[in-house]
Length: 436
Image (cartoon, rainbow, N blue to C red; front, top):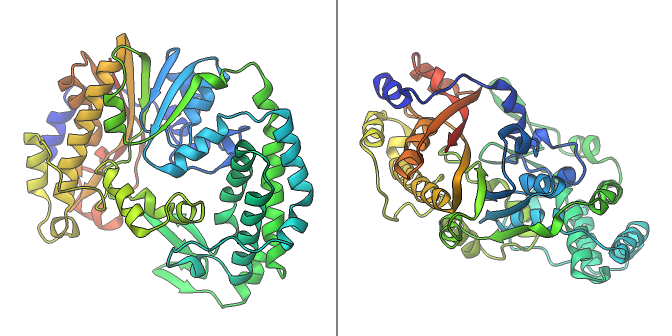
């Protein structure tokens, strides 16, 4: 394996730039006005625009919650963002859609009177999510659904309704009995200890978390979030280019194929990593409660449309491969979980999809334009999959003249993988791949 990794690195790997590590995740924008409205841990800091020297017209094929796009508006640039996740596309659109004075006044009036309005409203129908009664305490669930009904009934316009709904969506984890972790969600009634999770005493943990009045806890969380969003609203009124940003909800492979050649100065994105993480799973509460999916068939269809980075994707679709990829797959421990599942098909499909996306990115860039891809390497069955150098080489195959891999930080490895990678853990890194 080491020989393959070294050959793939070749002369592509540049000196590390660890200062970029704080900019390639949501923490880099977590406290900034507008950006902070919805916690989206896979997002970027808009400071990357200057740091990477992006041009006036930016394409973000996996735009997430729109951090780069908000930054583009703030700096007088234009951007197009694409995301298959309807929750992400919704969050991005709301952040990029300034409310007029009338809608802002309506939102302030809702903030002042929502508690009374919710008390007088029949609860919004609970979604058909099977764990709906597990992710919220009964009183919390009732308060959440009454608040949703008040939003739907009292909002005067669609933009006002979407603004209020974003505030509501953004508190679900805060008021819920769950939290996002890794490849899914965990429950607050269990506490992590050395050696595993242990149950927390029922009744005690709820009181410690939510207080004696759970309905009041929901109202306080919503009021704080909506007030903060309204406090940020003046940022919309500055001379920014909000109308020069466009969000497309769709598959990046399909949508980039429809774009005009030579129509962007820069491309920047961070695709899902080839690590089996299914973000529809970790975001399923917001997807269901927000009405972005109404059935398990719809959720499965979303998974099938997404990049082949997880086991729920369309792994039966045709996939091209490369000798280096096949060599690495052949080294995976046959006793491992990866070898017993569809991970080999995932790896082939992932890089086949990435090759197609990079081909479209090359086509839509102006001469001299650059493409930046933030990726993390992964490990399966004692074998490292060097996504960064593979993406760099796929970029060269797609017609880019130059490729560079810039490491930004080391990635943690599960203990069992660490034991299996005594000489290879140094390749467990997150990098920015620069194609020009």
